[in-house]
Image 1 (cartoon, rainbow, N blue to C red):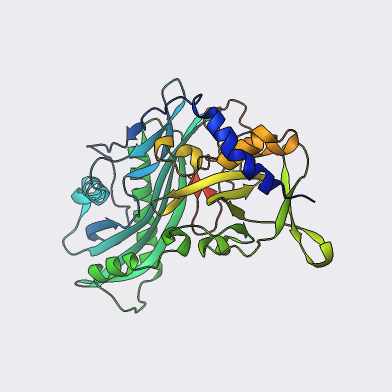
Image 2: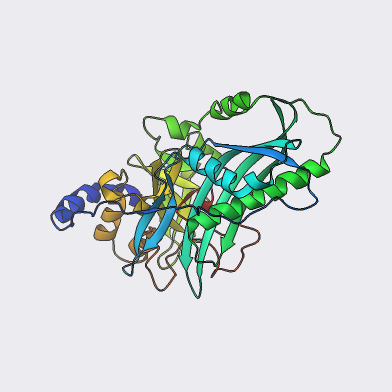
Length: 370
């Protein structure tokens, strides 16, 4: 069986140059700024332990770009951002929400935000989403804090108050879970550490090799861990048409034996593709994340999909169609919804009409998230 990838790669440069003059200049990146309410309504839950102060610090790798949304009637994709340091924004909002309920003799709370992203989707209803992962600490000894829980959740809303409201909802949930965890852990002894040490140790967590490598090794990843390690174990493989618009892979064994395999993704010609629903999705690094390439402004885009251009132009039939359908083209604006990559790993959001649209790779499990 002839390796289709090698044939397609040889065509990609030719067709890329042939289409170069036809490609229109890409418009500048569009932004939507996340605005916080100046007068939020919130209070500390009744019957909880008194709280004297709440401090919050974020350690996101990219604390300016916080997701994507649709902008205007043209359904163009815009980047969600903040225009001030995110820690300052969150701390100011926490103070607005809870300062009137602080009690002098209460406990001190510290939150370390490790992941915060927002998303939006229009189906029968319009939905917005907040994805928060944060560690919660409580001080039992002045200056020393003990971890009581990690809150890792996705919140969905049909409100129209904007992403600032979604952020406030996430903070409210975080406080409730912190106080509940403290109540359940009452009387337990644990060593406390300083806030400076908590922050320092969080920032010292080693990066996955794929995030720090100067280049990517060629081959197919049999697992998400191989992707993280930038170490694809499968070099000798071929692709084949599964059915119309779908693609599969086989491993070339000894004596000409070929075994069907399931891969996580592959690296070809220095670019990375996630294998999803029997299609290839081009992805690329943005900060400490891997984003679906069509969400990265083409002026800054590394993965120009030359490999896929070659396949689409030089090969007819199901294989080319499947690969192009598998890219993120039209993910947001497609009215048919059959091109949307949905986030299917959220336990409490199981209906496709409510599931968020995937825009990036979850670096904890290798699945699509937003």
